[in-house]
Image (cartoon, rainbow, N blue to C red):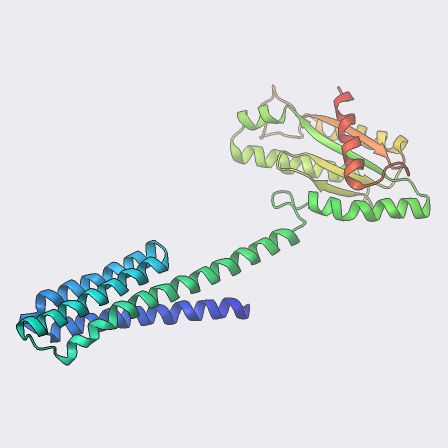
Length: 285
């Protein structure tokens, strides 16, 4: 576990223990004060709870300000009672000068520890998301992996003078299929579609799922002529009558929109490469 996260959890646990101790001492003080001072003890006990509630549900400085105002008000009341009416100040009464502040401080420390743990969890979650390069549904590489691999493949194609073709595949009328199918059938459709694309290319070619609507990209180690053959194989696999049996009604079928482009030196970056292929998708009718 990360040391910062451990520290945050330790601060939070100690603060919670401190707060519970303050509540216990406040109840004990209220009990020991005796019947003549029961009313003011109950008021101070409620003040401790109020400061705690404000600390948990609002900002910590409001809780501390409330606790401070309570302590000042109580001290002023006790001094007035002593000098005006001669009411003695027992030693136990001095506890109320510290308990509200200690309670508010414990709540503030608890909130600080909790925020520290939450920040650490958010940072770890962000790091995990940045490291994930696999699509959770299909198990294929995702768009992040494509943008990691594409620059390397482009440089290799240029350096070794070997062909490289980027192919994009989309499901035609995908939104309509999403609206008509139950969720589990739709997910199975995407899984089968992904597998048919994988089965239609060579092992050396890389397949990527680039969005949550079944769109895919393929890095083909071949020229545009052979890419046309890959395109035909993908369409043939998807259009088989049994391709989506038990997922689609017999009157429905999955159609594809496919475009590809062979890499050349005029393409300057991966984003431009992908965008040029996307612009070709509109011509596949």
